[in-house]
Length: 600
Ligand code: ADP
Ligand code: MG
Image (cartoon, rainbow, N blue to C red; front, side, top):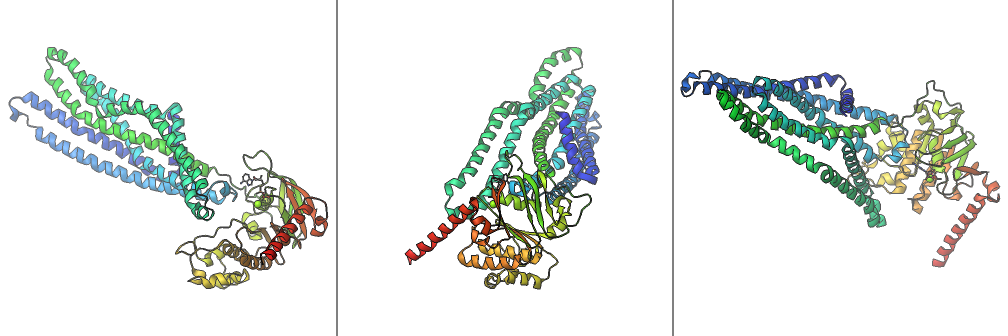
């Protein structure tokens, strides 16, 4: 257990980088401050000894004044040194937390985009930002206090031999019992409970974020009961775990701990009462009383130090779970960068015997899928929901990497293409496109930050966004998502298309958006799509078959396998799934038209 703790602090100090030395300096100063704080008690002891010796001729005790000043100087000095210690540790702690954040973000930059689908941004933020903040307390305060307390224990051991070892032992016993009680709360299977408690907290935080974020959807669909469920369950789970840990584990040890911490004299007084008779008969009762005076006052410092170590141990536990959370970010999968990157030779896309299984899934989402899209061709992926269309599309820009087989762009496996080159080659517009909370201009320019304002405007024009810009108060400089400016789903989609147009990539991957679009938006989106796709290689996921009729190639994906492949003319009478889908689609259209007619 000890070993592990050291390695956690080691991990933290690893993040500290060159500020590690500052931490050590802070720890050293903290120990020094603790020793300095003990010296006034020795001064008191000296004063009492001299007084008792001189009694009743008090004026003979000449050094009392000196002792008093010494006591004052050392306690004042102790405060200053402790202050300096905390300055050092705080500085180091802030730098360490900032290093953790930087390294975590750097790691996330190399992480496949698909990772963010299954790890909500609320959760990641909580893990990295919250985790880093929680380590601050450990490094800034707790570690210094632990070292200070360790210094105190050593000091106590030394003093035991200088003064009365039996009274010292009584004080030490209180301290040892108290520390032992603390360790029971953290050690063994209780550590696991503590972990579960922390996880429940994590989950509740995630559910809370998602819940707040989902409020617009909840309101639109009136899903109050349903949406409460996850959040409510997370809160209840937290409450259960908290009770399990506090009532089940902490109740007894914490009571023992507090009793010992606050009542060191409870151990001291009986010891003194037992020792008094023999001290009387030995004839050195004066020394005995002096020592008792020392320990009676000294017990106060033991209480303070133990209270500190209690905070320190909870800080240690917090930091431990915080580090575990940070680790999930630091250990996030990264895309292997090609050692010897190759350039795509053309703008075609080919799937070669691709199998892909999501982490934790039993069945592959894509099962030996092979198809080829020639440069400039349009290929449509169709099929029932869950067939693997989105998965196939996301393998092209390396949201994920294939489990086996290969995805090739321009005749080169995407794994062997420099990620930047690949990103320049492929533009993708997915259904769940989110705009950034910045101006429309910056949203469009995200595709190509060096693009001029005019270029961005041209792209917005081509994406049929003129009406959006016109109605916004500050035109393309209007901030989205603040000041009450929100765009409808269809409008967001058009801005996303402008972004893709500006990018001017030769290969377009599209997850056709239909969910949000009203008829008016729909027509505009179709126009924008036409501009975007003209003369380019297009791989589109089509939800309405009307848009795939003109495709050079239709690929039907069902259960992760290609069941049919061909042109519309070939497949519409092919007797397979596509023919059925086409018939159903036409029936639906007819039904819509006839219902409109009847209504009219
Ligand atoms: P489609 O787009 O054709 O509806 P998908 O590619 O989204 O199908 O899904 C294919 C299969 O992969 C489904 O069984 C789905 O449940 C699963 N799947 C999709 N996304 C994930 C994910 N992020 N993690 C695990 N499984 C997933
Ligand atoms: Mg899909």
